[in-house]
Image 1 (cartoon, helix red, strand yellow):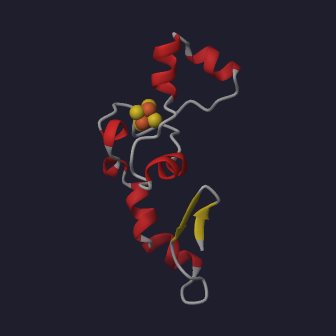
Image 2 (tube, rainbow, N blue to C red):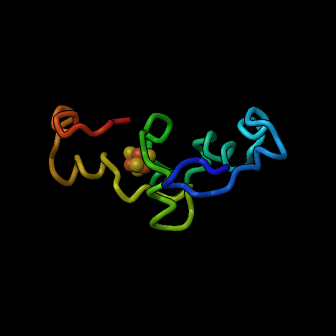
Image 3 (spheres, rainbow, N blue to C red):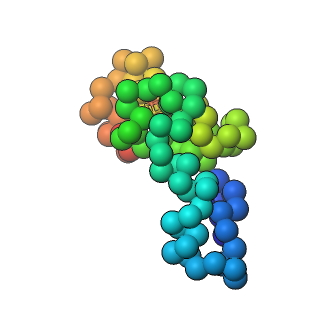
Length: 95
Ligand code: SF4
């Protein structure tokens, strides 16, 4: 059993454990739940507790799902001088 298509890391075997047990005790899931485990720019970001970042994207680009999401909307908004209204108009999720 893995988390989702873009984060193909095994978190447990449902032939050996219940889904509830995997959900509660998976080391990967527990590390993802603890937002203070994030690294790089995400790890020191003021918005990390509520950000809708993508751990799958971080994994695809760095092989580490706790690393910085390379497609940070905050940085995009700053670089392109976009407002939250602009971001919502594009249909992107903001935190
Ligand atoms: S994706 Fe951007 S806004 Fe979100 S936690 Fe990382 S640095 Fe902060």
